[in-house]
Length: 158
Figure 1 (tube, rainbow, N blue to C red):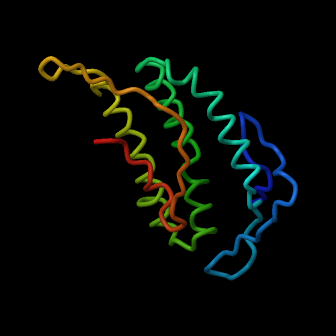
Figure 2 (cartoon, helix red, strand yellow):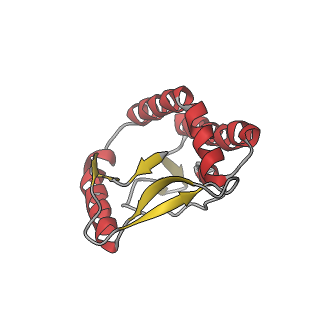
């Protein structure tokens, strides 16, 4: 059974703020409890956003090479845990194992690899006539992914 009752905030697994509800994760194929997760509170969102803002200053000045290196390390870990990820998708979403392994985890990996490919030649700055256009990080954002295809939402900019 998967137990995810802590939240990853500011580089550490922490207890949710007071009042966070623990929810059952139901395996839709068996209707049995497959695990538990904590439903974060507004205070948890604020803590995460504050941590992201603090991290932004150093992330915003990383080089292309540093970002590619980080993505490649994520890809290596993703590949190492691909079966585990597919098993979680099967258990938590009810996706057939072949779909979870090939399509779900495969699309997540493809998006990470595409991000590296885009980043290798991405024009962070370009001249258009007498104007210089500079693309740079501007701040923190929050994203919500759909329950039925969460790994598909990693699409890099095109």
